[in-house]
Length: 162
Image 1 (cartoon, one colour):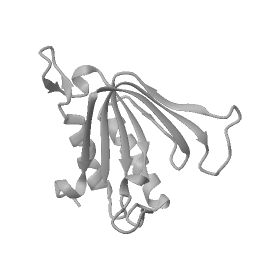
Image 2 (cartoon, helix red, strand yellow; image 1 turned 60 degrees about the vertical axis):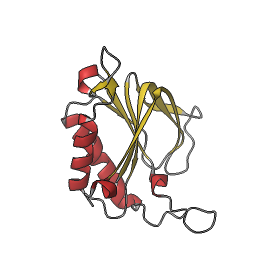
Image 3 (cartoon, one colour; image 1 turned 90 degrees about the horizontal axis):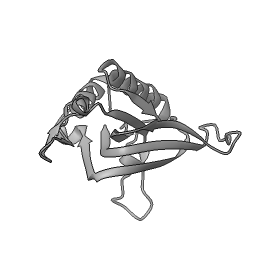
Image 4 (cartoon, rainbow, N blue to C red; image 1 turned 30 degrees about the horizontal axis):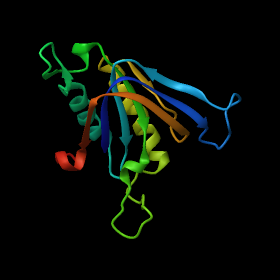
């Protein structure tokens, strides 16, 4: 599992095409919008499990990546009253080793990934994080005002959790 976590002043995700290929009535709509907090791209791999998701969510929740009054990255999301915008992003599993066209064979299939993404959303909410989301499988445009920029990548394989 991979989380690309960005500290933001604000972020939103706009759906321009539904997962079934249909276009929203007004051309697009905002499915999630946050103020200060974390914009997180969530990549789910073929071997990921709820146990891995639990560890990833807990690690993300405890990351001290917000500045304190002295400008030191000492505060976690709860300490700053931050929000989370979660966006499913299978392309985080792009394999570019061969040729110029990425392969996505290690990304989780939608029938496995969507329930796991929803599980992650609920785990974040149960931990007290205010959460907004994109729409799984939809074509989305993400906009944000990055703070710093400050971006962290959590990879369950690198953490030894797979």
